[in-house]
Length: 253
Image 1 (cartoon, rainbow, N blue to C red):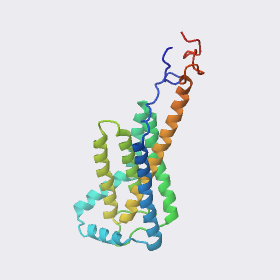
Image 2 (image 1 turned 45 degrees about the horizontal axis):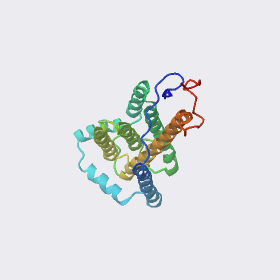
Image 3 (image 1 turned 60 degrees about the vertical axis):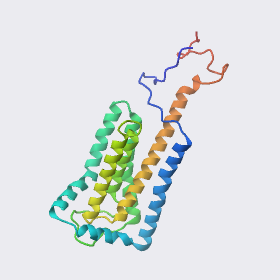
Image 4 (image 1 turned 45 degrees about the vertical axis):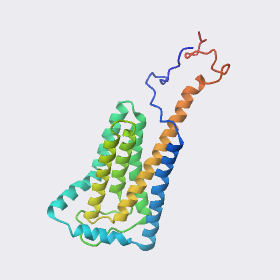
């Protein structure tokens, strides 16, 4: 019997299959979901109950005591890397390149992660309505609420998505290191500039990791169902429905 093609009806190559599930993968997915969820719930509970957390002020004051014109200029530039201009541009360009290269799942992951993160952040800020720190005059102008940090969520969503995309390639560790430095610099800049509590940043990171994990799980599930639908008619025991039928619908040789 000829080997059936895994191309779609239009002749385009099938997307790469997601990696097979294993207990290790399931445990990792569960950890990536539960750990940030628990941390975020704890932070949100403390914010609602106590307002500023004990370490919020001490960290901000420590950073402010080390302020200088050079550091302020650097942090002002760094904070733009996680803003509403740079992150969408990077996401759109990268997702477009992935889509053009046939990696539609990865393009969908990147787009859903960044767009969904922005919408989720807007909703969470409206729920918690935490005022921004007022320990000193802000070094940049912000008008929205504080918890969780939108810059932290956007930068983490972008970095985590790129790590997932690069995970099975030789760029895995490069993506991890660059992504970690990127989110840390953006988060630190928001605290230094006085517009976010450290707990805002930590909460933003947690929600972003949680959201990207959900997106990956949904896309992998959809990919498996789609591939099962494509390959299902060709798989079965001898004498099953596929026996005697060729890939074009005619009789098998």
